[in-house]
Each structure stands twice: as structure tokens, then as C-alpha cells.
Image (cartoon, rainbow, N blue to C red; front, top):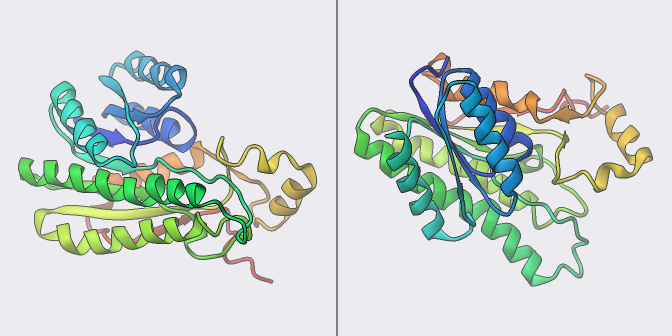
Length: 252
């Protein structure tokens, strides 16, 4: 499916990022992982990818800083040769009420989720243009791009922004043969919401709203992401794929 490709992914040490990185290796890709502060997860992911017979590298860096994007892409190319696929996945969601939202929480969330996506996608796209052979970019947005959340007033705008970024870059980069799409996960069991979902009653309420009857797992996103990254989606760009077990359509 991805034989001979090189995939770069941000936030690859845990959750959706780790699951996607390992799935990409199983599909034949070499993988570069960006991570921040989760050394054990990043390096164990590299070991697992190498055990599958693929090349891998883990590079630490804060995606909110523009220089991190330049460094991640440059070091990945140095180690793996090229960039065929870029997955913008890194994100945070420190749940907080709106009226007393500290400026530092708002700005950090914007910096990681939206600014980080922009800088990373821009750096990866420039490398793809330089190579002259097209490429695929997939951004992990969220169902929160389409709906609100009482304790997510800082988070939902960033995910709407990521979705919009893919729509606009699809236009800007189409002439270079670069496709840009987003996935919109529903409620997925990852570190980002583990504490929030520790409330058993809340978890049961959320599960009851999902037609497929369960919360998502990180592995549920790997397939859709790799589909959009692969040649099976060669005429798909500017699209957004909901991966939510049917939660969004279950209004009634």
C-alpha cells in the first residue's frame, strides 16, 4: 500500500500518531516521528518499526516553534532520503471553562494545534515541491471542527482551522501534485482525554450516543489516514473524512 514511501508524522510517540506510524511501516513505509517529552514511547515505536524491516527515526521538537518544522523535515530527509507523505497529528486539549480561560492555555493550544500544523505542513510541502514528484498531506482535525464543546472553546477553533488549512492547501498545492486532506476523529481513547473519560457515567453517556456502540481507539484512525495518504485516494484532495462511529449524524 505504501511500499517504497517515506512518511513523516508529528505527535508520533503515542495515541493516533503512534498507531499510524506503526501501521505505515506495516504497509511498507519508512517513518520519521516527531515527539515532545515522551522519549520512551517514541523510541519504542522506532524499535517496533525497525522490527518490521523498515527504517525509522524519532526527532524531538516543539511543533509550535517554526524552526522545529524546518529541523524535522531536514533531519528526516537526511536520514530517510525524501518526504512522500506528511501527517500533521500533534495536538493538545487541556480542558478548561471559557470565562476564566488563562491566556497561556489558549495561546499554547493555538500554538501547538494550529500554528504547529501550519509550520509543519509548509515545511513538508516545500520539500515535496523541491522533489518534484507530488505527495500527500493528511491532517488530524476533529469532530470538534464541526461541533462545540463547553470546555473546549480554545480547542475547537484550532481543529476547525486545521480542517480549513487542508482545504486551502489543497488548492495551493494541487498544481504540484500534492494532495491535502483531513480526518475528523470522534471521541478516541488517547492520552488527550483519558482523565476526562475516567468518569464512568460520562463515558457511558458518550458511548450511548455512538451508533457503533463504542468509543474509538487509536488504531481506528490509522486505516483512514493511510487510505488518504495512499494512491488509492489519488483523486481525493480537499476532503474531510469523519471517523466517529456515526456520532455526528446521531442528532435524534
